Image (cartoon, rainbow, N blue to C red; front, side, top):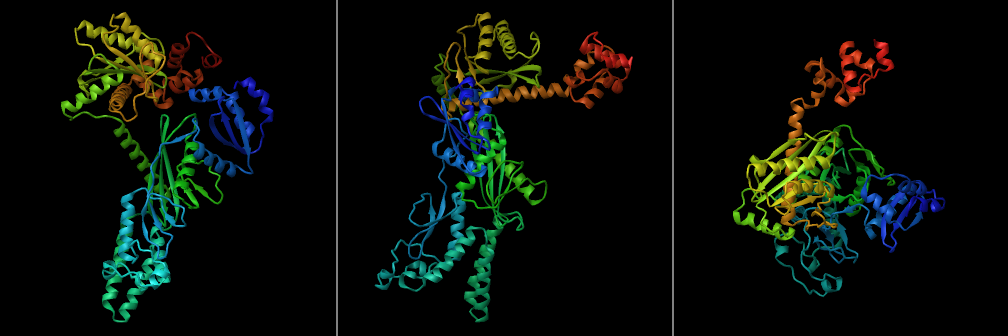
Length: 611
């Protein structure tokens, strides 16, 4: 749909709150969104120039639009999340979480059993959870079974069967782990009391259970039943030990949900801490793939809605690192500046940072320390996946970088037998390119690199990776052609973020399987060239590279350059100063030298006044 076509229907779009749905020409549901004002929100897609490629493509693909008006922004929020979960449109945020979570089920039956399950069956049973760790669920069940006698058998304990005397107590009864409801030795009322204690433990509320055990212990002691009193004392110690193993923040915090987020390119990682009665009961981190230009606030709102629903949270307070729109009735949003809740946000941030780092390590392939056979196996796989003529035992990768649009540099890393060969790494100061031009810079460094290898009669790599899309790959191939090296080695482009691989002249890219050994090795090489390039930049900054332009002005020394950069932080900001501001900072004569360096002989009103 073009902007002109949209203008013809824009007046028909309601101004109330609601949700909108974009459809393609074939009827495919492309995107679902919410808005306080439908007309204002939808219009923004067609009147703005979008930098994001996917947003532009979405707008071009829209064939028709449908709306649903609701009573409030909260209703729009809830409906949007429900529909996204149901239809999973292509351009909405994609949640990378396909795990089934463990629950503790209280079975709908006479004298209900309590056990772990991953299947939710709608038979009237009560499901507690979900939990993120099976190990933690088993630990909780062990605590429950030690302290609260419940049956573990699969017998049908209907009143009729018990009355007929069909069953006999088993070893669990004699061990004290069951009170024998199968022989009518325990009433349903007493059994329900035990189930209530189970629920309190699972909610993290151990005080009522501990109080019951303490009262029983005192009662047994008063009746001179010291063995029974000792059993209750051991149960109290067991519960207190379990409570101590949990991360207790503060009993004053109560029940809250804590969230934090880290964004990395097209992906966002959100951590959730579920706090019950001041104790961290659960933690979960999810990965979300952004499809359009979603902000951290939008991603966070979506993730919170998903996680609170998945974990059936009814906490009335949500603690987040920054303000977001989350129009849930009766729920308070807190952005703490200090205290226990700020510590919780910091802890959540540590969890999400650790998750991202571990995920990064899993995505990359580290062959250091591996056997020759293991290294060769990966290289043979890469050769097959990219259809290379030779085994890529020598791989080189190039990347351009600049600092805030200035001072372009390039880096080249070398891998031999799948392992980084750091002695062969090279970095390049761009010499022949004026300004920032990634294509020309790539052409220059590729030419310099392989012209030198040819002059020194050094072997060429089997595979060259250009970190960039078709444009940078084309620039690199221009230099390969000039050097007469076409066909001597395989050169491919690696699109940023998308991890698509381009071959020269091909219209379509190829995508290797996400978890393939080949792609993990390519990621490892790409991340290494990024690291090496960034390190080079930092070294240049520490040596004063960014003040050289000021020091290069005749009559301006290191002290004056340092003074200006400390005050204004960058050469660009110094360049934007008026003559009057420069005079105030460095005096009349030096100010004129600096002004003329940046602006030629041009004089402005400020300079004339200062003269």
